[in-house]
Length: 129
Image: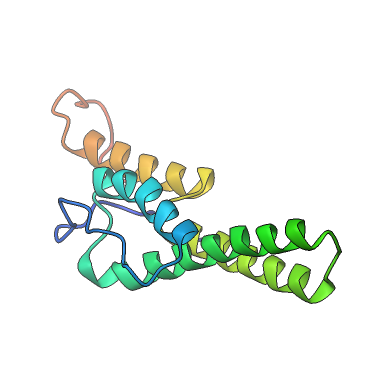
């Protein structure tokens, strides 16, 4: 089981611009996900490479989809490449709380932290929390 994702003390407070070398689709993904990552306080400067890789993988999925649609043919080599890019994107999405399950891990970590700091939780055995 993966550990819960929690806020990082060194988290970025503002989203950096999408790297210029990313494709149009990858930059669009960066702009789509970055506000949520910043709001949750889980991205540091050291994480930007992994986030970039995620966006590159999502962008590649879209680029291959365009290529498959425009050719009108099924290119099995492109289909396999697209499937690999989807798998990579899914794995990286889980690392950064971009899937429902990993977002739930972020939420449960925040709830536990809140409970531990709540003086109204008098009757709770904090040794197990």
